Length: 186
Length: 186
Image (tube, rainbow over all chains, first blue to last red; front, side, top):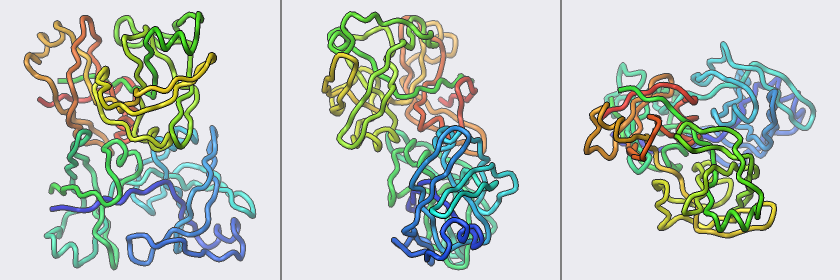
């Protein structure tokens, strides 16, 4: 079955406490909606810093979560000089230390991961596409730099937009753009 | 069968005429040997510039070739603001325009490509691994961001070191490093 691609550039999720430390009473105003219902790119950006270098203008996504998480690509990790694990969002057990700087100051958190490849689903999508009991799939990608990517996790939320989320390394390696169609292999 | 990975960062090959325009009588001195016999990374770097931005410190490889070619990744192409085709080395029919700047000046050439995934072979390697009559293969990559990459061309030269060359996008997307071992699928 087909699924559309969503490309995730590096970004930051903050918990309320860390948000307050970085932005104080500045509201988390929406710049634009993201495809997953209720989520948005905010007007706010931070700088992230590792032992080697910084990356500026990293978008803060909303709404705030119960945990602070910095999602980077492997390419970013070389720039920063860190070695983050590949993890599903929210799994921060061995996330690596990174400094996040906003207008009010800097915080250092064990928060950096490379996000696992994943497909957003909800109960209706699972039923409609016969995905019951499946936790990960592979995806076939066409084109001159195509192939198959493994370990693509199904991420179930209350309400989802059916979409494959790839980081910029996966998208660029396979010449994929936002909205491209690829094939799920079960 | 197994093959080792070589990761190619962005780099430049120059013909003698363009070399002269950029570096004059400065010799193309070796910094270090590359794995393919007779090839080397030189001490020299250039800046490459597209409509959007420049990338500095791009390594000049040696020896000079009969053509000038700039090999970048898709990620680089977004930085530069260009849209180069995926091509085998030396196939510059629709390579895109890029400016190359050295100590003596700048040249503008239709020279930018994204290099095809390829495996270096010679007649002995082809015989040893039963690769006669095969022009491209796929490669299986293990690990958390593994999968299969298609359209991996066999590139035959007089004398070769048996190695899979990937650009930094392919390597980083699959968490591969120089010297990692992967599996050829025919």
